[in-house]
Length: 192
Image 1 (cartoon, rainbow, N blue to C red):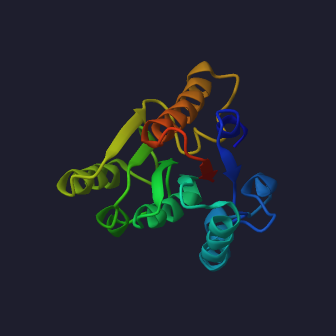
Image 2: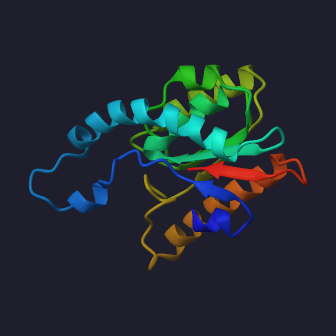
């Protein structure tokens, strides 16, 4: 988030996990990420829409441009926003919980940043998403990072040059995508 703020965006982020984090549980005996995430999918679906409306009320104006970016869990929320007309553009990296309907409803520009192999957005699902975007004549850009895996854009091993580069390049692409779609001179807001 600091990276986008450093490029002139006001950056706000919803707390999908209500103060918890999967990172806190890594290494716990018997911990199951799939079971852990289930209640947060329900609570995030409940808390995110009013949070978005509060952000729009507090920071929006007739000329404010809103952008949205989501990593993993956040990707469906970005796609839901891109199905509306008030968001300027959106992006996601290593998404989870997407279905074809997310791509069929898209109205706004999308940047997809994906690893070559991702258990939450497998090759066949990614290809199908691209086919839908082509069929809809959507505005989109896809970047695939060979050798990268799920989580590359948020928690790579900084000691591994290729992983570090993929994370940094994905973040650069998001800023460039937003800059490309921004109307110069209007206020900018980004939501993560």
